[in-house]
Amino acid sequence: MMKILSGYRTLRLIACGVLMVNSTIAQIDTLTVYSEVMKKDIDNLVILPQNNVGFEGPFPVLYLLHGSGGNYTDWVSNTAAVQSYADAFNIMVVCPDGGNASWYLDSPIDPKIAYETYMTKELILAVDKRYNTISNKKGRGIAGLSMGGHGALYLALKHQYLFGAAGSMSGGLDLRAFPSNKNLILLLGNKKERPENWEKNSVINLVAQWQGELKLAIDCGVDDYFIDVNRKTHQQLLKLKIPHDYTERAGQHEWNFWANAFDYQMLFFHKFFIGG
Image (cartoon, rainbow, N blue to C red; front, side, top):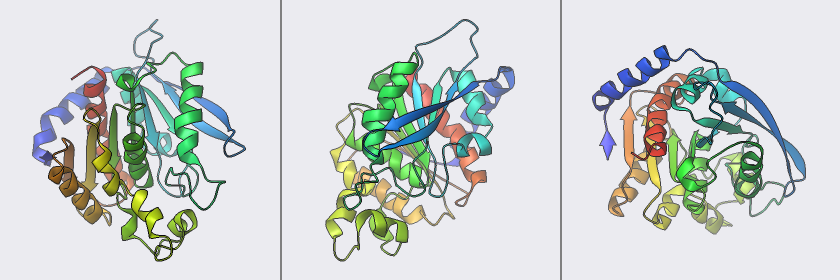
């Protein structure tokens, strides 16, 4: 379903009210996980809600992915609302480091890049082992911006036993549209020589794997250079009759837009976690 700005005004007021009432400060941990598959330590920020004094979980977990050129500190550095929403909704937020431009994939040509395996087989296990989490897909969601928007839907669609909801903000949802991107060429090879790598790793082609339970939310600014691939993915979801939330609003590929989009995404995940 496509939503426009006016349809969100009531929810935005509710969200602002929740954040104004909430006065606690979430605890932030750094969780370093050694990746066996990539043979290196990877840092991740873990935001623990502190809203209910004495309540120690179990908490639902939102994995929040950064974009290309970013790192695991980006969300907290650029969006103070991450901590506020963690407190307000009692949601634990994990911000993984996805490398400079991994697209959260296991590269078919470079075995040193295996972020899909890291996320799904190493990080989640480490988080559930260390913290009091709801360790099933009803208590686990994933979202991200730009490269991370693609990564969130990519990982959720390929691992629907792990994630119950996924959200993309300004995601590059069709890698095939960017055959000259140097980072993608390093990950997937030259598109003309290895087209199958580009086909099978693009979210727009993975939506056909939807199995009937995964909740999806897609958000993009109308002046974003990824708007066309978001619209095409939305049309593909409609064609396949896959329920999803789709939103276009004024905005470009920048933090002002993502901070605003994050409000709506958190409401989406809060509703999912409480069974709405």
